[in-house]
Image (tube, rainbow, N blue to C red):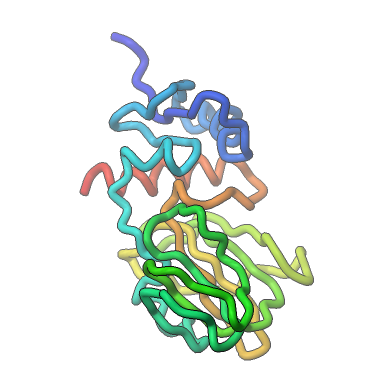
Length: 208
């Protein structure tokens, strides 16, 4: 019987996510293979386009379970107008699009589409939480004033699996956005945590 592979790593993909799996998967008794296309039943590691064919993760950047942490003024819109005020503009159509999420200035044109506009807010520090069924596997600081500042304690519901970004702001802790496991980068320190998270996060979908 041939080897059962647990991970499909996209050929030529060399970011930290692939490094984590290549060097630490064996420590958890898991196997990987370099492939041109993801293998059905494995956890894909690579670009969003590479991983999407195996995904059953719903495209949802702002799940309702995080409403208590989503307090900045916002508006969902189909676009087709000029901004009346500065705003961060997020394309909601897919996990990855050509649109750059950033601060857009008053007077800039927002084309037809499916967008979320949020008022600018000062984010002092930002962390990513890697979660499986409500349990935080690890966290990673990725932007801000104090890289050594511990991630705030966030309580996640049992039904949540993914990566969630939260920010420290002058008025409290604020949700930045949520991601499927394949639609975000790895900012943690211990690669084995990433391997563990990827494996179990995807397996919640495989058994669904």
